[in-house]
Image (cartoon, rainbow, N blue to C red; front, side, top):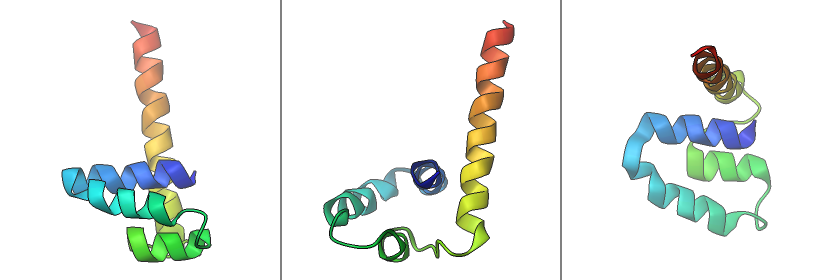
Length: 71
């Protein structure tokens, strides 16, 4: 769900997110995930908002897949 949450943040921000994502990847393995979220995504992972956006994105992806299968 963390990667789905990152995708939701990226989708909301557009192309400007790419540089922040590169910095997040560079710091992966050097920081705890909570610090990565705070520093590079501007989110608090102990709050529901980030995870709710991730779940909404996952549901949207499943809906799109089901629509394709129904064709």
